[in-house]
Amino acid sequence: MRLFHFSEENHIEVFMPRPTPRPVPGFDAPLVWAIDDWHQAMYLFPRDCPRIFVWPVTTTTPEYVTAYHKMTSCRMVAHIELGWLDRLAQTTIYRYELAPDGFESLGDAGMFVSPAPTMPIAVERIDNLEKALSDAGVELRVLPSLKTLEPLWETSLHVSGIRLSQASDGPIMPPRLVN
Image (cartoon, rainbow, N blue to C red; front, side, top):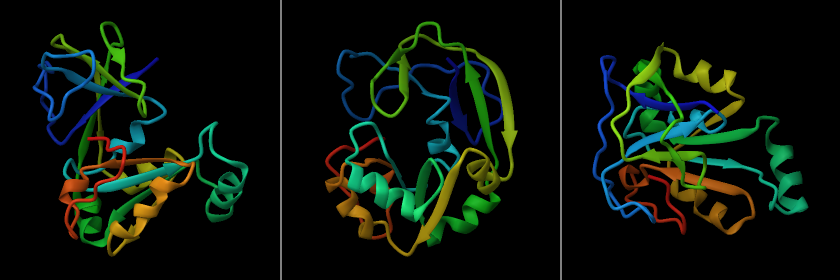
């Protein structure tokens, strides 16, 4: 298993545990966050960019699987607001690889946490985020507002939202919110 942490900073020598913005069941201490290889595309964005991801999972009903495959051939669709497109094009991020030792799965969209300081084992500069998304099998869709996607949470597709409190139309509060 490979784990990653993404940052706009290029000089992180040690990831120190930080307090979490909301409680994490089973953990009451500050944490280092990581994402697994399959889900890492969710972090190929400027940090504060609000975004919504959609993909089918094993519990997705056949009707939603069919509908999903009619709209895209990609494994995942990412949605951002038009106001973030220029920043996406201009941002460089760094993908830090972390050893999986000491990390525990949260069982939610590939997220892992560790209460221990963690040194990266490798770092990669990513300048073209749109190309990195495409290379990861992710279709990027740009919308005037993410609010139009709120009904997605009522489907059987997996839907993850990140930084939705930063959305231009105000916070989007889906039933399950990924920080």
